[in-house]
Image (tube, rainbow, N blue to C red; front, top):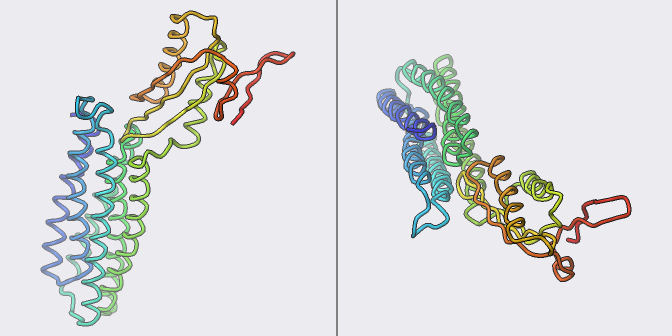
Length: 309
């Protein structure tokens, strides 16, 4: 099992234990905030299972049905996870408003304090590991899962504080109020994740910094005249880049191919797993005049880059 698979499996295991513990304590104590946390962790568990299978599917090579690979399964997973988080928030608000209208005492809040403390420690450890692996592997599914768990840390802290106040003051209204605050925080994270996961599904271009680096790599070869029709997008952890490379019209096909191969290898070195397609064109007046063309012009002092777009 690779790092992404292990991280996803660890999230499934930790969430399974926390759901069982929170649900048991919530039912025994009657705390709506603890039950809301159990519901939150339950959706985290479902999301972790989705992330686990999306990571496995994403790692499959391209096939006849999916010639561009399976990377977008991770983006789809992230969008589904964000929707599940939103459902959890709606459930928590519904239960909390019901308890505000019909107050019920919380029995033995000490158990709730204990399970929240355990949840905080476990989720800090697991979320940090998931963020680390997500950054190393550029996995949106693991990043979404890590966001779930880090949100769970803060919501658990909120519930812990609320139960602590309840124990000290016997103000039972604190329990549903804290649960509503938890739900509002969850909604904010849900919208943030939806935006991040949906971008690649809509073929949004790579971040400006990455596009600039790709441009710099293309123009780093002194034999390159320029380029145009550069298109970039992301599919799960993989980047897809295609462009038209403008080379001197008097060089051989073999030399032009070697230049393109060198550029593609350098892009893949910087972005492992990137899929790069290069279309080679000769330097002509028509190409230079086309919008979106970036060319290298000769001046009396030598070479410099200009953009006609």
